[in-house]
Amino acid sequence: PDEVYTERTAQSLAHMERARTVMPGGMTANIKHFAPYPITINRANGSKFYDVDGNEYIDYLMGYGALILGHAHPHVREAIVRQIEEDGTWLFGTPHDREVTMAARIQKHFPSMEQIRYANSGTEANLLAMRLAMAHTKKYKIAKFEGHYHGAIDSLLLSIHPSKSDAGDQEDPQAVPDSGGMAPNASDDTIILPFNDSKSCARILEQHKDELAAVIIEPMEGGIIAPKSQFLQQLRKLTKKIGVLLIFDEVKTAFRSSMDGVQGLYDVTPDLTTIGKVVGGGFPFGVVGGKSAIMEQSSPLSGTDVFAGEGSQTSQKALFHSGTYNGHPLILAAGIATLDVLEQAYDPLVARTDRFREELTHLFQKHDIPMKTVGNGAMFSVLLTERQEINHYRDLQMCDHGSRKKLDKALFEAGVYTKPGNRYSLSVVHDDEVLTKTLEAYDRVIPEVLR
Ligand code: PMP
Image: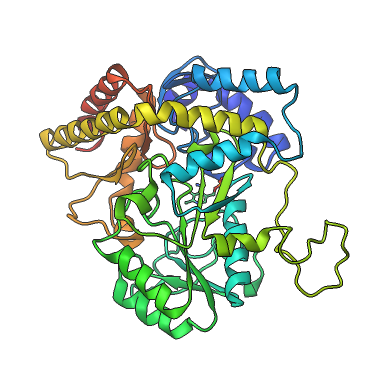
């Protein structure tokens, strides 16, 4: 037991003991866990949050990247309150005007999303994207990349963190379930691809093209590993040629890695795109968009909608898409307000993030510790490695995670919160003062833990 830790976080420990009696592991999401126990946060302000013992942390988690304006940005708060006061409710369950306003805001940055549907999470958005692809192609398998996460969907919850012994060859990755409780056939309709390897992708996709509805990809792996030059272009060309749709999962990257997503950065047009996180302003949200011809399949005006009262005798049913909270007015108000602020504040945010990354890199050089940052825009990771190039999940596996965990813990104790996994999501309110404080914390802890 780490006495310094338990002394500083005694109230968190007490909370966790209570939480464990009502929730498995005391958690509502497994990712929130870290050893010996995670701290309990109960207050936030801008770029910082505070635990139940009163400790202050600079928050780089930022709601898993969702809070790009920091905590409770006044413009978003105002929009939420105004929405409730003007409309007299927070849920209509009917069409309303913000649904169209938001669509136009998204399309300004993602012209590939010709038509749009809303869902309640990135996971749900990806479920709909897959169904649209299957309906459109009349094929029922999906290809995904090793190391890429698309939500808790059985057919995609595969090979995200495969162990070296299960994963198969680099050029021919195998489907490895990432969870217990999945049916043994959960992986039967999923093909696994290696990121940044056009040649292997072409071979595998050609082999399965007659069964494949779509390739789904995080075009910047994990939101941090850049695609090699021409990798996305070649994937676009190939999928088009073999009649397989291309789905970009930009849940993490949209409005964070770039305002126009990875597709804007690399000038590649997918058939379907899913986004979430930032665009929901910190509330549960997901969006699917893409080519009209594909999206139109979910229109109740095409085919027979089972809920339109026309019976379900005819063969051509509209593709099912529904949800109690789809297009939730409060979430759209928060999301639109977020984009309002971000359009002005994004470039300075990226400039600050880039400078911060450079200064961090210099600091490690000063201490003579090999390190590399990877990422784009307002999100990056610190990797302890001598490798020049990080091209995929397997390169990440080779980094010095033991040392990084030690570093992570020391930073945490110095009031810099980067859990889980030393990922930095900056917000527009991470100003020079907190960034300097972070650099000073690094300067203190590097010699303590990395030598
Ligand atoms: N896709 C990607 C790329 C993600 O990063 C995530 C969440 N981290 C999801 C999908 C799932 O989104 P949600 O947690 O909103 O279901």
